[in-house]
Length: 271
Image (cartoon, rainbow, N blue to C red; front, side, top):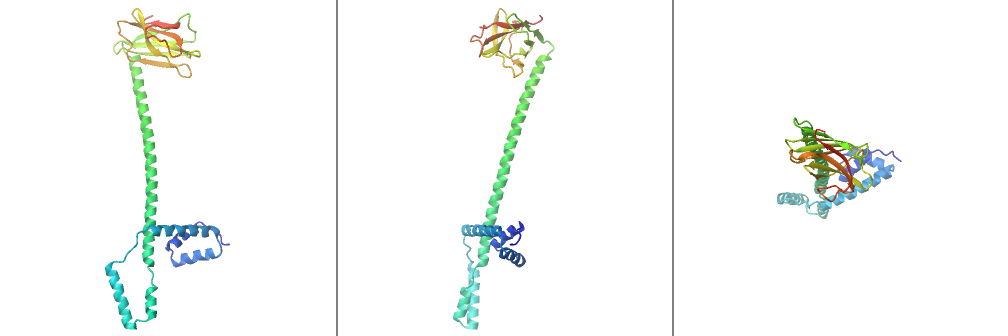
């Protein structure tokens, strides 16, 4: 059995299309004669594909001028030799091999073009997906940058007020919190440390305003118990005295103006 090489597969494709020169054709036929199951299977597949491609191509019709020239040549030859049965047989045996080859070639080109177009479309679709992912990442980074700038603006404001929050008898000693308030923009930033609430409970932030309090929402720390809460409008500088934290049932107090659980930390500006 002849040794199989990948180059023979290319020859099989050309053989099925009738595109091999004499040297390559003889080389492939010699290889097949020695026996190669892989090439025989490939040649059968290629041949079936070529037949299907040829069937899908439109029929090629000779032009009227070409038909007239062929008939004129046939008549001239018949007049010179005599119109015999043998001559007519030779004329009938002519086959439009070139027409079939042209049809196959165009059909194969159409298939290759369709495959190439599909590959380019898939690549373009992949690039679009990557571009969308990059765009989302840039948007996230832009939002984070804006948030960081907002925090820095409050923390570094020239007239900022600071409240170091103190633990009450109801709190645990690990709790840490520091509030910074910018009276000009009425924005506040409160930094919390070690604020992991017991199971089924949540810590809630409150603004101390005059004689009352106002809820600023539940504190949501990360896995380490750290949280940074930015309040866009903490209240009127003339009324806001500081901040407090209470320990509430999960979800926080049902009231916006009073806690239902114990106050665990509190701090006023300048104290």
